[in-house]
Length: 291
Image (cartoon, rainbow, N blue to C red; front, side, top):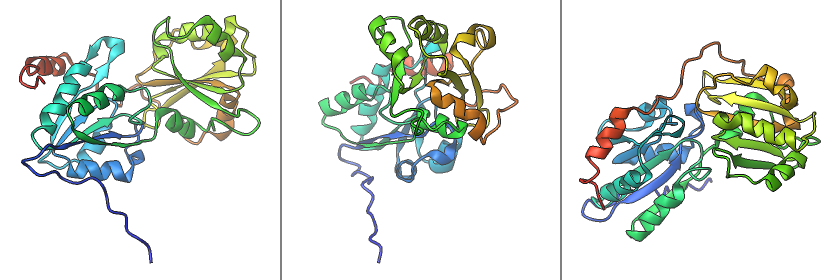
């Protein structure tokens, strides 16, 4: 006889302090959300959703009575709901006794501002739970046929980001160029020229290729591959859709053999951009929700 697991996601008494669920929605394909995260959405009173969350997930799992608050970030276009505002909203709703789901794209903890949110919740004695999700690197690798630690190609993988020039030192670039680890760069499509320049400057092996996966796991996914040393003539200057993930290593060569999802012919965006109207609404309500 199978034992049934009792979910820890429960409604709080209306007259007590609520609870916040920090959950990952997966990288794009709405079917990649976990059962536990979907269950939390069904029970939520309020959902604070990132930009990189599929609308299908919200329509499929969130009840009509649930309030959805869009708190997207699009740093490349300098349009983002401030993290302070998001923190304030979490506290505002939780102190009303509500069950709040903070829904993040990908995994809840990988390259997100979860630390700020955890510190805020702890400071206000608000209970919380973290539900992991499929992070973008794993989704992009699977939907591109590039096993990140394929035997004989890599024994480790590194998740990195390079959104500004002082994030990575030259000493670390030298190490990255020499390692046989697969390198996955998040939020780095805007600095891709510099990523390639640094790795080739420090002599990365020619057999290690570059892949850029646009809108991974969605119906608009596109994968571009090339040699890092041919980047200037093959890929440089290409307008890349957001989000795009960068993979560097020997495993990129496996894409041609094991790809099972063909590139989309559309340049349409899967995720809605953050609008000025959305940000203005939050700014206008900022004092009302202030801690």
